[in-house]
View 1 (cartoon, helix red, strand yellow):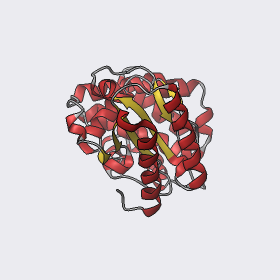
View 2: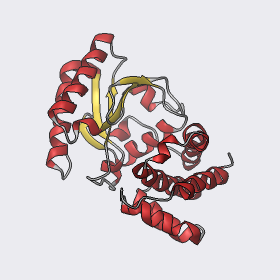
View 3: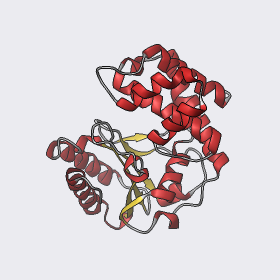
View 4: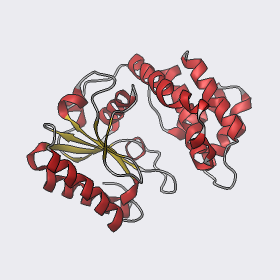
Length: 252
């Protein structure tokens, strides 16, 4: 599945448990995110997955999956709580709506819940899943998802900036965490790259592009983010300024 034995163990338990609970409703399970596009870092990354369903799950199955994720967190203490992913129907995944209805979703360190993602979230995940997704179970993701156009990716970035990142400038509680600021800076470089190029690349690749393409002012901030250091994280004010600059370039 991956080059990491402990990650593979939790993924095998996830797929096995989901198959038991969902039965024929489970159409496939896939990796996207860093494990799919190639910038997974065992010290900072989570495990992004998408489970595709033939139809909506009943309440009993939903409760079973909640219990499964709690069990994975207990039995696989390193990676069981680092799972981040959705259970989405084939119809919702393959559709072209930028924001499908709310879906069962588990965030790292949290319980499974019904969540409606910000506008654009699924556009980006569809693209990564279709082009680079890793099959754990089921057919190739290209058979489930239509190609995503570059301008659709740009619009998705604008939606996520508008709904998630711009409000953070008014309520920057998350940015108080230095490790989260590393994530924020690298995410901004990737969003800027998508706005410029209409594609999705790894965070390190986007950071290298940004060091050359942006004002030299941002270079020290990007270098600190790439280091993922809890002792010397990116500056709070400069991180907020880069978020503001990214929103400005997106026209919001």
